[in-house]
Length: 636
Image 1 (spheres, rainbow, N blue to C red):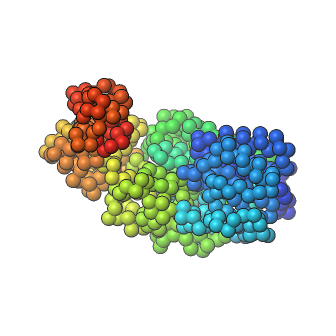
Image 2: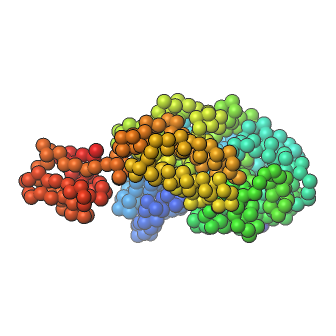
């Protein structure tokens, strides 16, 4: 059936709502990559088998990631016309016990994370409020979703449907208001009005540079040429980043609808989603979503019976980090080597096959439909003065709560790390946070009250980037951190321009010397000078930002560089060439645990006799330190 009217869309919506909220118990399992890697597939199978064995009248479905990756595998029970209860860190055995309790009409009280009393449909601006606030048997001490620190300050726009719908069912996306904005745009707005709405919303590109989205669209709209293209950059390659993957796996139609609206605004009829092949599940669900949209006439010719036509294809990337840069991405789609080209002309003027082209990333496209449906003023009500709306971060590293976090721009780093993130794992001391992936900077504790927006992070020598956020504690060596990221960008440099190709290699060689204890006077100054040359002379954003980790760690943690060079010590006890493992005689009881676990037999000593580490044999693996229960091993 090809949809041609709002009434037809409404019928699909009603079907989707029945699927989303059936008149019986519904059990949902978070089956994104993060959940599956934590064992969600085994939990799903256990639920399926137990439901079948008990012949229980219940619905079992998969969903995407709700964001709280630390608590995977996640299982949700939606009671008919009642509350939704989330269960964390589930196992197959716990899943079976859950089904048994539900089948007996009892509340399963283990592994409860929270309850969700109401859900907001962000596209249409309406709320689905359950008729009964909670089942009678639900204990009153179960926390509400909005009370959990991890979710309390989040505002989900890009992630609005992730963890709430079956990502492979277009009816459920439509049930929560999907494609209503596209109908509204195609039947009631001129392209210029769409662009004005995006401009007024203050939406900036969420791919890293933060260029105003509406302004970019306007450039392309005005560019000469009848043939124009729309591209979604899903080539997410930052270490520790998985924002785009989470959206594509949990709500692919949000991207498709946003791209269709963008195509109408600039006058494009063909679009491409460029996604790295390392995301097989995201690509699989996107393929299903495109086919479903085509079957309903939401992609293809004369969408909603209007003159507008738009087709969408997927292009798989080979995983080159440089293809995240838009001109390299374009070259890759064209079948060329993924290398950047000088700008201008910009892609909005001359992009794919020389035609005007708009490239935005997954998160940017996911914001478009809500902006159209709710208005620019609504969206601009979130965020700071210069950075409007929300953005998604992958919060990882040494924090208690890791996962996908969508927050209004402008909240502080401290709020993100200590409230949403739950503080530093193990009660250790915070040391730094890196924003912006391998091209970002490392920010120390003194700037934790800095607002998270484009200008504030830029002033500290970091960037917003695409949304990676890595938290480090007292055990991290900042020289080693800089070396790690330079090693990454060195390997990912396409090699086209000399400053990036040779410069990152030289930075890596110098950092290796410093961490090996062979640093010399003047090395810090050489690192700074070379970094500035690379930033100034490189052709594309990879080289222009690659030295940021070096410059920021020297700026804020210069004492660690000096300790490596002058004292030949690594204060964090990370750099192997600069540390020594030693036995504390007063603490050693001769239990022999360290000796038995040492992989190279570098520890001597009889039972109940103080042991000794043979330095000439020690490989500094740290096994003895980890295994000792009596604090008898120290690192110096």
